[in-house]
Image (cartoon, rainbow, N blue to C red):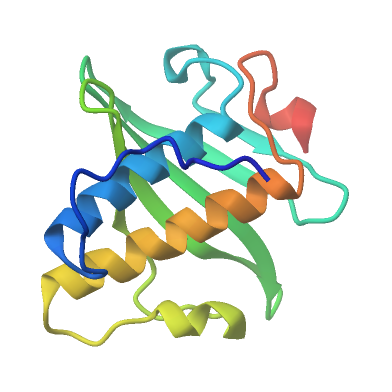
Amino acid sequence: MIADGTIALPRLTEPGSFTALMHLYESNYLRLQWLLLDRLEALPPRQCSRAARDLPLYLEVLERSPYTTTLRLTYYFAEDGTQVADPDLTIRVYHDAGVAEAMACRWQHLHHALRQFDTAPGDELNRRWARNNMLNKWLEYCYDHGHRFRAAQGLAAAC
């Protein structure tokens, strides 16, 4: 595991607060960089990473602009003869700020281990905190299991 402890917290932050959420976005950005062996601009629109001890991990570039890139990161599970994406996260990377935010995810996860991250309607800060905390832990998990993405590796070649 690589630590992202280089993020200096200027003052104590309360978990679940807006300030802590911004620090979580910074951590998400660093952890996402662990998986991306090349710059986002060099990555093909869709690709897959295979790791010996995990399911194939799919990355899709949904949108590119000068200051942001929007990604989709997911696994696919077989469910009643169809492929179901779960977790299915839409991530926006803000290049100039060096942060990554989980913008959206499935409202109710199908896999039992992910259901703890479901949030009820209500406070937006809590929903963002839950989504981004889940992304943070998942990125660490993917890195620890050997997932990597690189420009030369397309979807067909990797999976």
